[in-house]
Image (cartoon, rainbow, N blue to C red; front, side):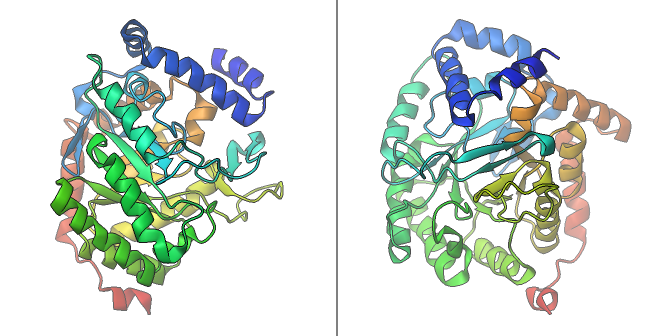
Length: 373
């Protein structure tokens, strides 16, 4: 009830103004260990049964903050204290850029949804990397994996996309625990064409070069919810061939068919109206691959998280749901997961995931050519 009142007050502000106020408060906490201890004591779930190991990293719980909230690594130490098992920072680009003209974020309270067309506004990969190096040198840096989303600069031509991504990846490679290639935002012109085979494969080939030169690093691919079956076949085949470490399903959607009332604003739709589409893509990916999957899109509750885990995800990311549900969301979700583990007789989440994956591995993965017909 207290958060509902605060949310109603914040929703009277422009969405970017409200976001800036929240980030300023979190930035202050990020730099004060006493504030972080207080936040942990109030918001962080503490139960080892929720630990998850995925793409070689250990997570305190499966709930992560999705990319786009902390674009410039302003509050990187706060997210674990708030109860997130991880946070995706960024999206960052090779060079600083202001993003699209305002207004560019729109609330749909009756749908508990958002539309955004931010356009990768950020201070640039090198500046974010330097900020993270400073943060990591502090004694109170949290023991939690943090990822960095990397996208294409708006002014980089498609034929120069690989070089543009390379510049950004090199800048942040050593300060990220894992990296996310964002080729699916609808708010940078032409970006989604990078999911097509001719564009995607050269980008993924870059990973071998960087791993060989800069050292091993988990790299995930974040995909669109608006792909058809054939496009999913192409992405899975390309990702497996390039030894991508996991897939994030999904980014925001440009579709509006699930809205009760369309406000007529361009951009990516997130929140519950995205959930059916994102869940369908997650299930389609699980039927095609044994790569680790991260679910994103329309997740608001423990029941939503459980549904994604049962559909094949090992981690889940939230953004819009956290805005509408409030800061206690990670703790509430953790409580629901623990009750569910008790109900299904699982000792802990990792053992449940291992058993799920063993069942999946025992079954056949259909050939892409058979699925595409």
